[in-house]
Every structure is written in structure tokens, then in C-alpha cells.
Length: 131
Ligand code: CTP
Image (cartoon, rainbow, N blue to C red):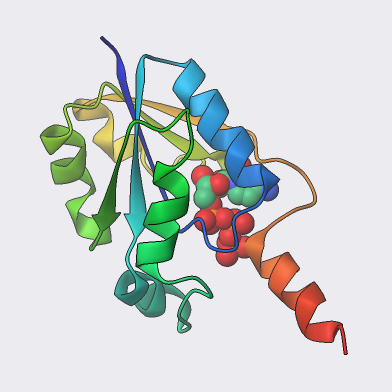
């Protein structure tokens, strides 16, 4: 049984999110997703997500290729989350290339290419411009 773990905000859910989660799940048997809390997002980006953490959990846990979800409260706890969830592989988008190599003591780390031309930030900007 190979357990895959990934992390993200997954705000304003889009096809880039679907693609990375499906490809992550295909690397093993179970996919666990750590969803950044509203507070963690605020501390990283100085803005709250559009969707609340409860709604983001609801959306991600409804996907057939996601087996378990939890709220990620702190970036420093990555290693604990990986250990507690008995994950064998950490998957991240390649916007994070190299940034999680330090957890290789605990599990394999795979960076997958991002889906081109779509992001939550871009969607928010486009919607803001529509009058
Ligand atoms: N992701 C992806 N392809 C995209 C957008 C995101 O593969 N086009 C991946 C990221 O690499 C990450 C996961 O989806 O592993 C969650 O990313 P998140 O930061 O929540 O989404 P973004 O759309 O990148 O959000 P933002 O624009 O706010 O950074």
C-alpha cells in the first residue's frame, strides 16, 4: 500500500488542481491532501482565500481520487504531517521544485509539472476586471 501526500490551498477550484491531484493519486494507492487553513494562507499571502477552509475541505474530499484530507495549520509541521499520515511520497507542483528536498529523509519527493495558463490568482484577477 503506497500512500501519497500533497499540500495546497486549492482555492477557487480549477482544472490545474484536478490534474495534479489525479496524477498524484496515480503514483500510488491512496492520496492524502493537506489543505492550508485560512490563517496559514493569510500569513503566507496577506489575504484570506475566497472559499473558506471548510468549503475547500468539502470540495477536495468529494473527489473520487482523494482518500483523506486534513487541514494544514503550519508550514513547519510538514514532517509531522508526513509521518503521522504514514506517507511514502510527497507530491508538489514544480513551482515548488527543490523546496521540499529536506523531507527526503522521511519519504520520496516528486515534483509534477504545473498545468499551463491557469491559477487561482489569475482567475481572481480576471473576475475582478469584469464589470
Ligand atoms: N497547480 C498545478 N497547476 C496549476 C495550478 C496549481 O499543478 N496551473 C498545483 C500547484 O503546483 C500545487 C497545487 O496545485 O501543487 C495547489 O496549488 P495552489 O497554490 O492551491 O493553486 P494555484 O492556482 O497555484 O494558486 P495561486 O494562484 O493562489 O498560487
